Image 1 (tube, rainbow, N blue to C red):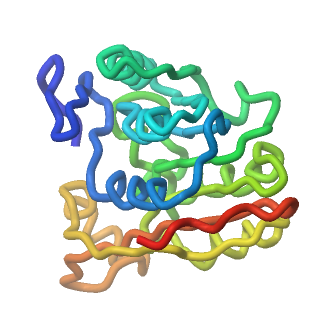
Image 2 (image 1 turned 60 degrees about the horizontal axis):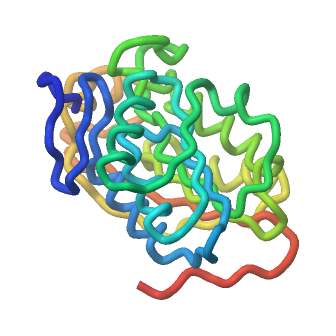
Length: 237
């Protein structure tokens, strides 16, 4: 997943420093959802876990005022370099989103968080794995985003989040509904297992998270909306 070179030119013209998660199928899927979402000029957008900054820059390209947060200094530096290369403004913050964001007021939150179930129950604090490992059920970060979304969104604001169906899409919908948001699955896609899942096949089967000989992973995009003023629905795509 992570490049072993100093930098690597990606298909979208981005670069990724070592250990920074590179855009893959999940990034493309939520990027398509972001493209369908209406964004007024100057809309306040937050990306949680920006990585290379691909999604943040996609929103900035449409005239949004974008704040991008990541716990990895490598990701923050990478996103800054990509913003400079593309001559787009980004407000970049290093740290845990729940700790560094004291105020909400966002029209849109977009996130491709760590969601891969891992043998270690606590997410790693260093290394490339912190971009994908998320505890035994893969929900260590997802659940925190669900809990904080209402305080970060403006009335009528929208959360877009992508994760594996292995984590329990219905659980995400239930948690978002419990905190007062209206949530639904708006996109899904089957993708081949990557090297991380393949290396954990036996453990995943023992946990009941995967069936024997399973080779495809379902990705889902969750769209949740804060109650309040009516917001334009996403464009048909």
